[in-house]
Amino acid sequence: MEIVQIVGMGLVATILVVLLKEDKPEIALQISIVIGAIIFLLMIGKIISVVDVLKSLSQKASIDMIYMSAVLKIIGIAYIAEFGAQICRDAGSSSTASKIEFAAKIMILVLSIPILMAVLDLLIKILP
Image 1 (cartoon, rainbow, N blue to C red):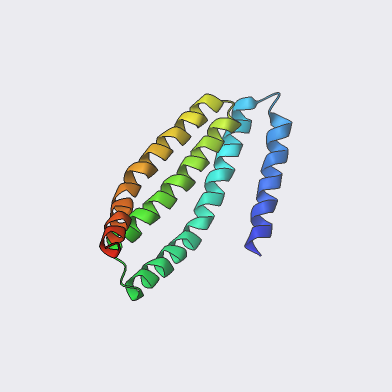
Image 2 (image 1 turned 120 degrees about the vertical axis):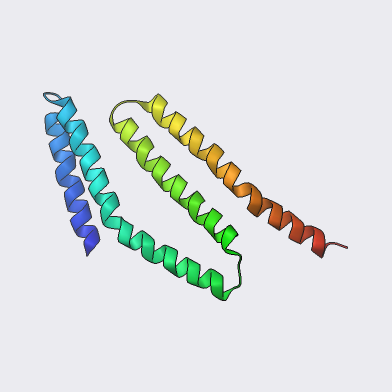
């Protein structure tokens, strides 16, 4: 029932942000960032568990860890970029949020090249 606690914290923080936004916008932004960081930190243990399971499965399936590492990095970039972009949007800077998302897409594209090359090599080997 951790989700109930997280949603509760989020709702309390949202109410505080709405109440403080007009009089003390800097405090409202800080509350928003802090609650986001707290929720992110609470999920670190869950993320590590998922990564461990994925590593174990990749070893059982004899998947090269280079590819699994790239996939995990891509997932991490996506989550971190989304988190940063949402903070920027909360602060009223949609243009910065868009630039963070753009940079994340480029980084994901760069990290995906070895995986794409491996798939193409496999296809070339399969085709006569």
